[in-house]
Length: 131
Image 1 (cartoon, rainbow, N blue to C red):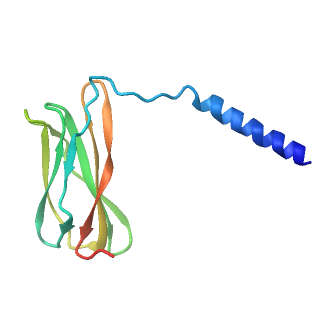
Image 2 (image 1 turned 30 degrees about the vertical axis):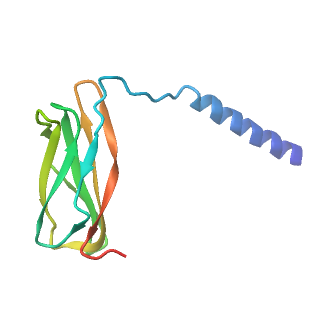
Image 3 (image 1 turned 135 degrees about the vertical axis):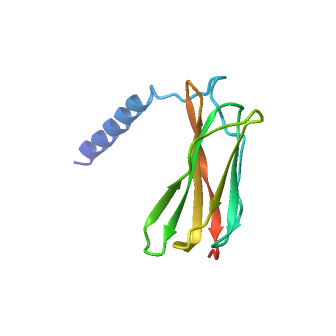
């Protein structure tokens, strides 16, 4: 019985390696990669804040803010898409809604040119009070 379990485990490992062996990730010279994401570390209710993506000129930026509301629902407040300016800057102004719960928030998004898109890892910030 132990030999059968060992065989099934080995078969599962081999199958996974074969299935994943063709997956390769690479970036070409045309892939727009965000160089920097600038967000405030702390946001307060009723105040406006600037969120910035620094990337390549003339790519399109997509972004939004995710946070918990006071009813414990995960909210994603999507920004309108923006074309990066000649210096590669995409910038949005955002006011923290009164229904946002104190705690953590996330800035999420990606950039895109005519050929490819690249996501950037969410950046966290604090809403009013963080643990």
